[in-house]
Each structure stands twice: as structure tokens, then as C-alpha cells.
Length: 215
Image (cartoon, rainbow, N blue to C red; front, side, top):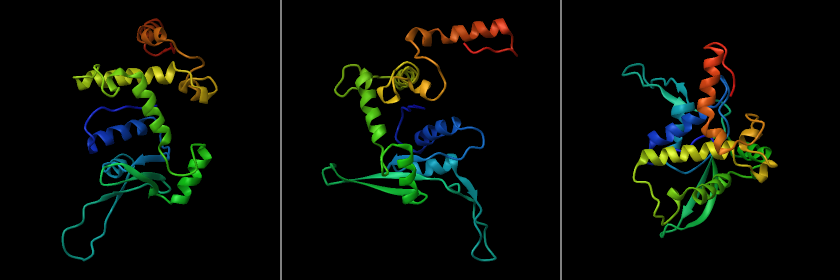
């Protein structure tokens, strides 16, 4: 899990969330496959982070030059899960469509990754259930609700780190997400996580500014 963001469901929050994904990519890497729901700010936020500059031509020789826009990178695949609701707001049908790229190419990529056969966000919905089950602040009808947005954000970031580094997953053959990604060779304990900062600082002081050691 890369990031969790607390805030209004607007363009700024969506762009911050997508930017956190971009920061994890290697330099010069192509944008990854993206599967999102039909949240309205997502198309603009995706282009704001990953888009390339599109220089528009004037239709006539005279007049003001058209301001440049943004276009998706060539070959980028982005699928959208569109939930059709009735007058009461209940979901009656779910459709998958292509936002950028061809729908057939998106389905083939999804199947190759082993996360389904069509455009879906089921893996994220399952994660939301785990998050609500382990975070009392997000449980429905709870008395542990957060009154301060900052404390809620810090709590979610703490849960994200422990989820990635300390929680063993059966679907990952008894490994943590960090182990599956090759970032760790063992599951971390809460004590390991809490002492990480002091251990890193001590190692840096011993080795000097140019001889950093991994904790």
C-alpha cells in the first residue's frame, strides 16, 4: 500500500494521492496500469501528474494562440469502474470502461497481473474492509471517531506502515508486502518500527555523513 489520504474528495486530494504513486516509480519509468472508480476529479488529476504537454494549433492564422493542454502518455492504460445506481442510490450494475488506452489491452493487462479478467477495483474494496476492521477511527457508528483531521491522517499512515512491513498475508505465501516487494527479508515487529528512527540516527552518527548504513 502506497498511501492513504484524508481530506475532501476534490481535485487537490486526488492529485496528491496520484502524485504519491508517481514518486514511487523509478526515474524515467512509464506510468503503471491504473484502475479507478468513476470519481469525477480522477481524469484531471491523472493528467495533472502523468500528462504530457499538448501544444494546440490555431484553427485560423489570426487570433490568440491556444494555451497548451495535457495528453496521456502513449500506451498508458487507465480503466474506470463505473457504478450504475438507481434513484435510491443503490448500485444496480457495474461497468468497466477505458479512460486511456483500449479496453481490450486493459483487460489483457489485468489478466496478466492475476487480479481478475476485467476492469475492477475489488482488491481495493477488500483492503477497505481490512482497514475499517483494524482502525477504530473508521468503524461505522463508532465512539472512537477523530475530531482532528491531522491525527486521523497520522493514524492511517502508521497503520499503512505496519500493514506493509509487519502484517503477514496468506495470499503472499506468509510474507509481508515489503518482503514480497523485495524491501525486507523478515516481518517487522512493532518494536522494530518504533526503534527505526533511533537506530538509523545512531548508524549515521557512527558511519559519518558519507557512509550511511541501512538499519
